[in-house]
Image (cartoon, rainbow, N blue to C red; front, top):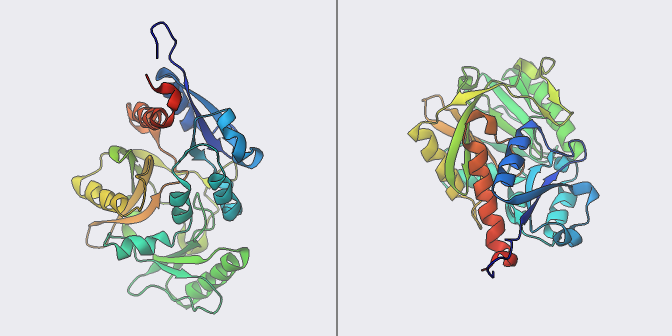
Length: 311
């Protein structure tokens, strides 16, 4: 770059869905901090954009609020793979993380997780996990707690759960079966946020599922996800250690952003409930420096692949 030449602006696209064309309220913090760092951001509705021409508008694409991808996962992954700019997180990570079967991979890698079983067809009998009073059945391809229900581990509860699993399978997604850990009702669920592999902040998540399939009191945001009751929380060293073991088990390029949701096992140790690498809420409002850390990580990635930034 020659003296007197204005530094070119890095351009990043923030991928979203048509229902929320400018993201959710949390994202306003992110776009402001990106602008502070000289990064021009624009919203890209994935169902209304041609992936092969994205390079004409942006230098990189960051997934933010594409919560409707679960309606057509294969089309979403194909759109990402056809994108003419780098995508964060990359399509390979998205393809793996978009089915909760990834929990089996984490478990195989030695990461402490909530025990998980996948029921992929009506030919497989759904059984309640052993030694629990309650369990959860949810879609393997799902987001925002949609389709997740909690059942008693008795004859009636298991019958209800089997009907629910059959409905999920008929809709095109395998069913996930996990024990419902009592610590969730006590407020143990904690979301840990990482940017470029570095811990940023955490938030506590209140219980979401009413007993035996009840959902009436749960509020939805634009029909996309159930609103979570969040409070500030400082993650413990033990929680951070487990979260970082989960991140280390992700193959390929290190995620630009990650949210690791943990709960306490019966012995009090933290275990992974979910690893969110596609469109997680980042809870930027729960830490004063979180939005700036997220923006810094995005800016570094975008500028690392933008040839116009070379001196």
